[in-house]
Length: 147
Image (cartoon, rainbow, N blue to C red):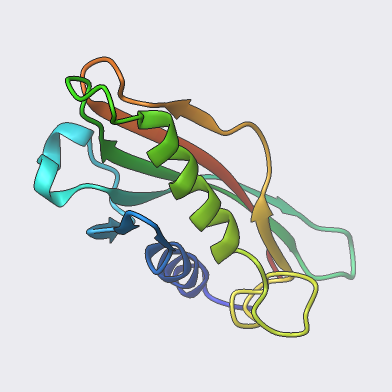
């Protein structure tokens, strides 16, 4: 059995390394914090929230674990600049995080370095572009099928 912290650290490292045309994350953490804790110069930031864990067991078989994680992204948008399109920045970040979850080898599943059976985006992505007020937020649901 792979330790939970090894799984979550591997997932955060994968997301934190994501790159897009505007750059990459200035910081990443597993500690949930409000966007007001990150001034403009510290954004975009990736926050990994361990949301829900489901454990199923059948007699004589090992536990089957499923972890639900949320990647929350805080980023700044400039509502006073008519050329700045918050949704364009937001979409670039989402594309980069989707790409980060693509397996790098011949595997057809993202195993986080053979720590899990599969890790993938699953569910509705919540998006706020920051066009009003300047603070953008993205929430991406991740599901991990553990050993």
